[in-house]
Length: 261
Image 1 (cartoon, rainbow, N blue to C red):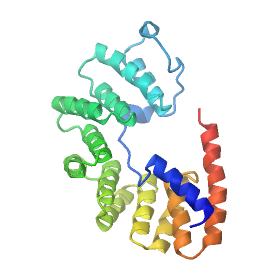
Image 2: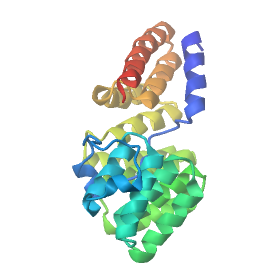
Image 3: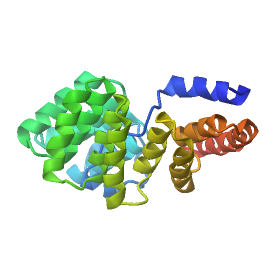
């Protein structure tokens, strides 16, 4: 392994990036993914005077999208004082706890949401995601299957079920799920990246490169795909090309970190 790969491998271990699995945003999230947090993420409850429920949810989502999960939780708490049964607020608060590594708190919130709406596919998916984070893959898959009975073509749930299987070493089964997700959306980044990772784990390095390159066309700074592309080139005997690629890709990756707010 080259010097570059050794450094990068340590980085990968530090962030535990084995695959690409994500919780599913609510419909509200998708509408305001890129809004600016005009009020800022630091606030007191008094600063919410005059805001209605939807404004508070928008600020919670904005905080979440800026990775300010503590502020997101505070916003969601405020929303829940206005509507204690809001699935959007309970689910969002659960996501925020999950991102903070507080998995048990997240699971308790998802359970509360599922008591209100047992067939909410987003909450089912998000609880599955959190269960995968703590290694409870069988229960996670059961939740994904329930969500897929409701929405068989949901690309995020298909991807996350595939990732759960991937974590258990069931790479061929994972590939089947990624393919189903890509039939729904051929440019779905999560599934493209994961398909490349699964082929790498199977020792099919040329196939891995094919799908990793597709993912990297969409996001050249995607860390997991940079790693597996570099390793695939190494395995194919292209050590010099691997080192050169990693050098250039790492510059792109760190430039994206600098640009983040």
